[in-house]
Image (cartoon, rainbow over all chains, first blue to last red):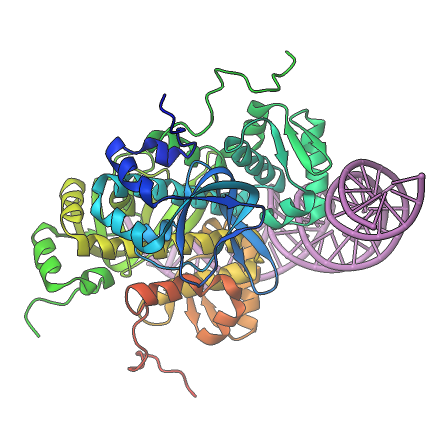
Length: 249
Length: 249
DNA sequence: CTGCCATTGTTCGATTTCGCACCGATCCTG
DNA sequence: CAGGATCGGTGCGAAATCGAACAATGGCAG
């Protein structure tokens, strides 16, 4: 390997050497602490941001104070898909739900590069497609899946994009993301815990049985992830090398 | 005017003369009766289809038989956005929810043309962006809006894309689209009728008070439509010439 | 060590929506 | 115009979820 560390971001890692070398000088490393706002609703998007670590949420801020998440991404994607689609803004907000870091590029330069390189554009558009499918799955889940399935799906999506099996989240936060009451989240987490699928700790959730969770998530989990793996790259870290906390068999 | 009738389809009508002339020889007129399937889930997309009249639905066919609509389009859009994003298939189904007709173009030729003309591609991508926003609004509505708001929103989206104020739909169909029971639809329609916003007839709904409906739809209706008008063209027919049934003031 | 505060757990009634059953009304077709 | 299918309306009890209040817990700061 070279001294240049490989990108953790799946998109940057999937680029051709040519595209990557071309893009690299424009990418600024950026620290992204918890709650950093990447895109403000209705305001011009200033940067495209590729995550190396952490999680970003796309949320709708309804006027009555209700906030609902409609999509989520980590090192599998980036913030600013609208720029590739030819819009300089979106009506939703994107913020860091789990702190991390990444690389960003100014909107103007980003647009110029995507217009100039068909292969770069194609990759980012394929990612946008998978994100559209994810949003469609969210709409599907919200319409017909009970809270337990939605919650399981959400935990899986988080788990897909993080190392290890410990997820940092509070019930309160989950209740906002899913658009349900906090006490419903508490109750539902207890159900999942009773089924030995997870373990709940203060401020965190530990995934015990991933396959079980997938079963509990219903069919709203899966299509978007399959689409990502079909069109981009493996979503999760290959489990060939067990993580730092191997399950006691 | 020339003898060539103007396209009713907003996208085709928005094209530059050059793009339109270039695209025209590839467009085949196609009749699209009720329930015609435009895109089969998981199968290669064969055509891009631009509607001139009628309505298409993107739906998720879950395994338990539950079908939920995640988006809808009429002469404002087209079926096959995934082709522009670089995917040859989608996990959802697209079918005609209201019969009509349109123009279609084979997938291969369509991809070639969109890759060759940046202006054509840009328009179609902007449309894709508005559709993504629509899907996001659907996810939002499904998560937090009561049935009444979702129903009002759905009627408005239909109304936006049809001439006149009479919408052809059955309670049964609405219940599938919204993912609720039929009797809930019946009940909710009665509420809207009681508020003088609509009039329900067998197999149809007549919009009486559009502004009132917009009020009843909550904030999940609006953002997607505003985005369309900002980036593409007016969505509804201009109300400067009243329709065939002017309201009795 | 101690006190504060975010987080979690529990309870209760109210409300929405579900799931099913049944019946009447309307429309289409032969 | 008669049959048959579709569509709309109604009435239950059951389940999920809501909304609000309150207690218990754990972690961090002073």
